[in-house]
Image: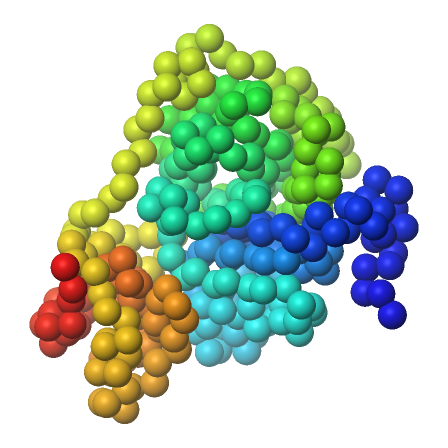
Length: 339
């Protein structure tokens, strides 16, 4: 029996379109409300490879609006990308899932290969990063956002149409509100995600016929869907002036991720993950290992370590405690750093 029989029967997809979908690699930036729905739909649609990027753990407040996750994921403090991978594998084992429990960065975008990015982020700082990277590397991405009862969806490629700065001239002001906690209604999320996935499939199957200048706005409370034409701005800092402000962050300073008890530090040295995993295992510390990172518990704190030198600490009550935990970890593992 053909898993994708009903999708192949759609004339806009067909056998040739399904073959294109089944060869595609899609990077899903953010595995929360939008990202969990998007990842599930793309897995069911049969993409070849999904890359999930999100640093957070599953929390109880996520369950109101996020797909895939359950109460057991909350109790086990599972990373969203790892929990998502477990659930997605049960839906479609044919899809390769690469979980990356890290915040999106310019370095990450530079080193990964993909056909399309889907922006499922919850902050405009990271969205600006995708937008600028899309201009530099000339890739397309599907923007999506949710707040309250209102959502937005648009396919963006700065080399083919307006960029995010053209859509939101006040982008800098929006970035300043990134850490504000804004509510969202449960039914809005799948509406936005479904439109993101529909655009993604259209792009993967027939990129010559997609529109790069149409912004969809959704009012879930009143059931209103409207499209607006967006034009490039002559004073756009990205499209017109080529002003790029996002640089790789290699600061060893401890930083907090907005709206969470998650902290990160970028070391100036790379990490030998195999040596670190062996060192932890020798001390009876259980290690969850993948090619790009390892995840473990150290001094009752969960940590993820990446080969590029990034460390992520989960559940610290404040910045001072996070700095202390990082210092304690580095004090006993400095000999495992590589230049």
